Length: 489
Image 1: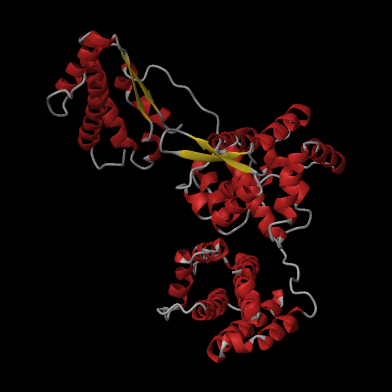
Image 2: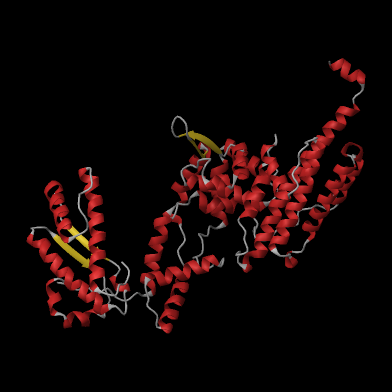
């Protein structure tokens, strides 16, 4: 309820809101809406019908009046009208109670208005918000929305104390929303240090958990395939893949139309190929991806023995190095070997395709060698990555004799969605860069660029390897002698 200039507007708004709420209950219970318009008489009639047919009593809660600071006189006049309203209901033998939230300052107003004594019969003073109370309330709120309430992080009590002292110093009103707004502001700026430290697990416990996981030979092979056998070269991508597995577990399955699945198709494909997730039927036409039975059973054993869950230990065991800083990826001599391969196959590529690959590689080389302390502006970097991938994509499409190739880089990269190999790494790269805007906090830019560079290299490597495979296949075919073909016919 918003602050109003007079008590009659308060009363009219109250009656309209109460009438609508009661009418919704009436429709749900009786099957149709109660005829009439908002008024004291209509409200009385609905209540009598609900009492008669459902045996109801009523508790009416007015929750927002304490926010109307500076409007206390009007609020008190409104409460006086509610006393008359309440008396009419009681005379109709209706069991009605009111619960009104207010401020300590109301006590002085109530002493002046003795007539309200028949309406407000008891005062219950809630103690002022203290840091520990705020901490407990916010922790419960986070748990209410957490995927796994038993394992979610709380806000650091030190940060709660800081907000408390600041609000006291400013003389501002202190409510729970004061703390919540400050927390949200910190998150928007990319500051997650205000969260309490995550669960720490000593190395011996991690070793024991790994032993439990890998005692199942089939599960051990699946994890090794995911970590080492699927060309997931960067630890940050291994971590993302494992986080997708964890999310699947915490969500008790995930559908393919879930936005999280769509934004991480590349990683879910890798998990599927490693047999770490499996399809589970929901009904005749729908299914979910769930963690494999082997993963489920191993995690169940860990829970029973250590009271630790998949999200607590999986990344710690299988991603050993920090992912915030990117390690150098190109091995010594790799640049030269890629250029040498292009030159050796210039006859198959043709001048125009070779020029496109060389142009793409020049940008790739430049992006790879940028020092992390000298990253360019975010959108310049994203544009360069797209340009490099677009040049390479045009080279592949031209080599495959695809006639209609778009001009714009974004359109060229979208063409992969209809290609027969449909590389998920390109779709993943495009999905990731689409999230970053001019509002990306400046303190996050370096980390964002480092992450984009990793995704870019994954996509570039897959496209280049595909082109290389096609060229090598063609080279083998063209080098066959006629007699060989005749014999194999």
